[in-house]
Length: 333
Image (cartoon, rainbow, N blue to C red):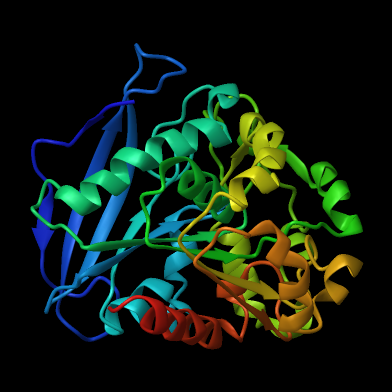
């Protein structure tokens, strides 16, 4: 896969995070030639946010299935990107292929392998220089759910990041996990997406089922649950069929970078008996340590009162502080 930066990207300067501080913004469209179809040109829409004083470390933010970059920019104190920019880190927000403002290829071509393939040139651009001339000494992948799985596979295959933050993903699943395939319907028929032009086999949760899958009712405010429904995106049949690949121990055990794992106690998809129903961080680490045998370090945290989509729960600021503290301990900002 090759990457062709656009002729120019927009340097900017005022505060898209709403954090009240000056930052630098660079809008980037990465153009990639996928090996699955060398005649195609896929476009990945992204935005780089940098503190006005600069940063040595950039976080590559990878959303999960049925999310796009908006997962990292939930309004107010839930805004992950704003939190990290204030803390002195650059962040790259992107819409994975098939979501947001990025290309929507045939659903069977959008898989874990093709996503991972697109990440290598993006990480290279972050290290060597973006079209706007920004480069970083350290790159950390931060993924949620499927995005965490992609971060794991990419770190194993490419060995090009300094740290991996895994949120909302474990190497065990709950009984509900096998049921959620029935939660989905064609995105073209969804009243929130309201886009009949979506390609075949681009799917999303049926109305009323997204909350059951992604939230812990006692840990989320009603307006955030409504926001979660309104910012839904899609997942493709190719992503669904390749999802089990991201859980293979051959990938997580190949990671040599530092790893942080954060999961909600009430994650409806991953809180199982194998990890003591995520009652304690120690129980999760005891189970997961055999899946990260080569990592420079493994740190685990369980967030009480929290479901699968951590950034929408009341504990979100605590999650962000945990990640910030871990980064500060293992990698300078």
